Length: 123
Length: 491
Image (cartoon, rainbow over all chains, first blue to last red):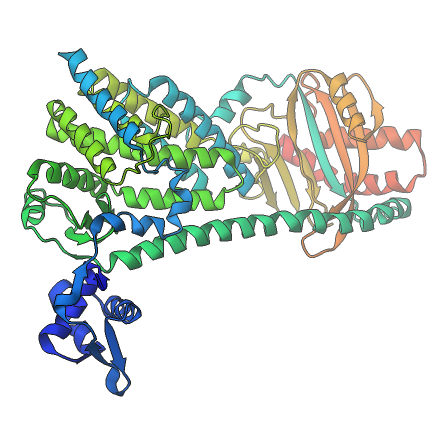
């Protein structure tokens, strides 16, 4: 598992694999039509790919070049990334305050029992 | 209305809602509490209040019969006697230095707190929005089809995002429902529950409400009850949303809906075997609330509406007639401007009517008070009179109170007591003026106008202290009042 990218990064790579080397501007235009991203979003994702060593950018015209072939890239496991959006942001500060915390397996069991017992009591 | 006043009246309302919530959580539709929180939010964020016929303060004021009335006047002496200025000169520098220090620290602390909290909210919101930008169009057409069957005036888009555990909605005017990347589109029922939940959030502009709650928290960060409101508001929004979903789907679906919710939580559950299994959490609150769901009875809906209307009327109008000071003053009513007939009546912040014109200004208390407490001053000689009327039953206790406040009793007869002290007024531009602060305490039976009283007092004190500068100045002023006063009262 040499290169693990998330689906949005793979979208960017797809443009390069399909069309060969392309400028950031071109990638942005393609993805705007394809998935509705604005320029900043695409540029951010290109930067992330560069950071992960999947893209090399050369100076004249910011030409992007795929460093890894399609076969060597694996889509990141979704489970590992669950709630990275919240965990990575300052919203996390308020998570405890709002009771938005992850539950333990035991707590989940307890919740299921509440629902089941309820149904029995009603019927 | 000042910020502490808004915070205080908001806190009073939050307290009431917390109590009502604790007593009637299961008996009233959950939307009731969300509506009440919105009233509290309006109270916290809107500085103006809407005048209403009934408010707490007017009710309180009406219950106190004004048996005796104190008339408090602050009279600037146009040509102040030397010894008064001297006394003021000692006091002025101390007050002038102490005041800015006490006043300037609190606003700075408040501003810092509000900015820090605002920055936290804003940065977290921006960070989320930034991440949401990288979402991809939904893989399955089911969501789009479902939304076509449930149209809204705003166009709703469904996208998918890696890293999300549960669906969420982003945006108010152009809402985007973000589904987790690994949504099981095959499980139509579960997807429908998720969509329905988000759809209700969008319909109700809950994202906007949460933003307003955050704004209120930033402004009132020093108020612990506003923190309580923030937490409970966020919870109640979810509970009300669940309730609305069940209303659409039918009570029979509640078991499956609850289980779907648990499954969502399970996806991000942490495998920590030693954690307490019995701690109550917000998800449990939601599950129990869902299982308890019943179709709202007509009675509970009527009760809820009555509750909301009642709370809105009482609290939103609470400030309509409230003075800047502590004493309740009845709301402004009709002024007998014909009696004075010398200008447009203007109500001031103390709940008093000021009628000014042609070199004189008159102050009349608002409706609900006996009409004998007219006081006046000459605007041409730059004198200013402020009157505060206090409904107290006993003149002796009023005299006592003002003595404890540092005033001296000038004299007292069976109809009248006069208290006085010298005061230094500090103005915003840093200048000061020396004033004589007088309090006239008189009974209702005398039916004397304050002007008459003042003249009466001047004459009494003149005979007691002949030749005093102070009294001479007062007399000069009183003489300039006399003619107009007589005309006004007789006219």
